[in-house]
Amino acid sequence: MGSPGLVAQRRQQVARAWALERGAVLVASGLPVPIAGTDQYHDFHAHPEFRYLAGIAEPASVLTFDPGEGWRLFVRFPDPDDRIWTGDGPEPASLEVHAGLAPQPIEELAPWLEARRTEPLALLGNDDLRHRPAGYHLPSIDRFEAVFDDGLKARLSWQVAEARRSKDPAELDAMRRAATASVAGHLHALRSIRPGLTERLVQVEIEAEFFRHGGDRTAYGSIIGSGPNGAILHFTPTRRTLAAGELVLIDAGAEVDGYASDVTRTFPAGPRFEGIQRDIYRLVYDVQRAAIAAARPGVEYRDLHLAACHRIAAGLVDLGILRGDPTGLVERDAHALFFPHGLGHLLGLATHDAGGCLQGRTPSDRFGLKWLRADLPLQPGYVVTIEPGIYFISAILRDPQRRAAYRDAVDWERVDALHGFGGIRIEDDVLITETGSEVLTAALPAEIEAIESLRSEAFAR
Image (tube, rainbow, N blue to C red; front, side, top):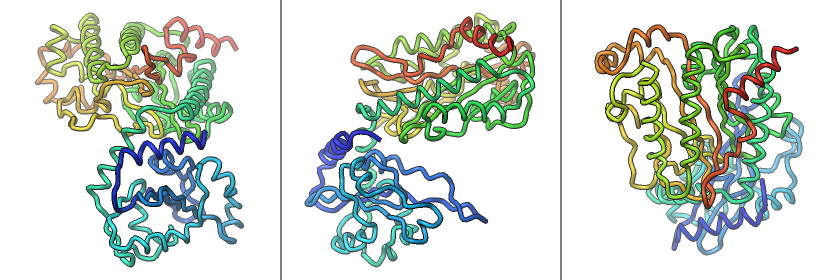
């Protein structure tokens, strides 16, 4: 995953922030989840808190911290039966290189807990250690008279989330490699997809390119929606066939060493944007470019979002879809009929990374703000997504209560004529630097002319 020295620095930083005087901390990686009716398991993904602090991603492992003795790493090594079915696993020396700690067998965790009987404990990472202790070679947790302090856990977990916001060089290296793999997949889609393919086949093609270019896995379930399916924000690809004249929205990213990329492009199934597709795409593109240009240290992400909302409202007024003053429309959340989600989120060991809201800030229940996943001032080292979109979502636009509430703000006849349009979203991964920002996914073009040039390659064969 990166330099063991950097991983050790993370632990030192977190331990200083914790300032524990007594008690101890356990950070569990999690247990594999079995697939019923097989001898196999779902793809294992270590808890991000464990991976961040341990530098490895081994299942059934626990990182511990005691203010008197410091950090220890307990790992479940394969037994003879495991080796028959799943292999030998990583060598202890390799784990030590990545973690910067010599791993101990998980069987030694029980005596470690026994020595801390009745001490306050904070369990971070995966809480399956409490509910499935046998997976960690532990008897019932009650046997140790363990005192799990949930208030302490909440405080320590929050401090880990704060530490995770700013990415160190090893993390940025992994994120750059994830971005490179993601760009390769999206470029392949732009150059090759034609009407007649299914959404599922598009998924196969783009994910294969991720893996060919260094991706370890997909960072999340690939979202691929053609035609009206592009209006469903987290659409799972189906056997639906792409048709000429409609749009294809692909939101998919590769993961490398546990770090995510998150990229969206929307493009015509045919060679060119047609009619209002071009107008709405240009609006979303302009909104995204303005938000990226404004992203820099000290800027509130919520302000970036609201500025994007204002631009979308103004653009929809110009297109005759909304009616009224853009400022007033945003105050009424009329823009959220077409842009219901937030401008983006923090990115890292999770697609929606930890620490997205500054401590003390509570999410808004406003229609136009309740799905905003980042509410904090940007700082150097943060990686955020910037992903405005405009959608024609039936669940919103055919809701009688919303139609009544916004009867004066929307040209409903025009909107109804666009039923089935789908949606347009453009998303890039953006690193906040000391002086501004760097688009990690800049190698993937988003301009109309560049998109159409790439699309022409698919029809020149």
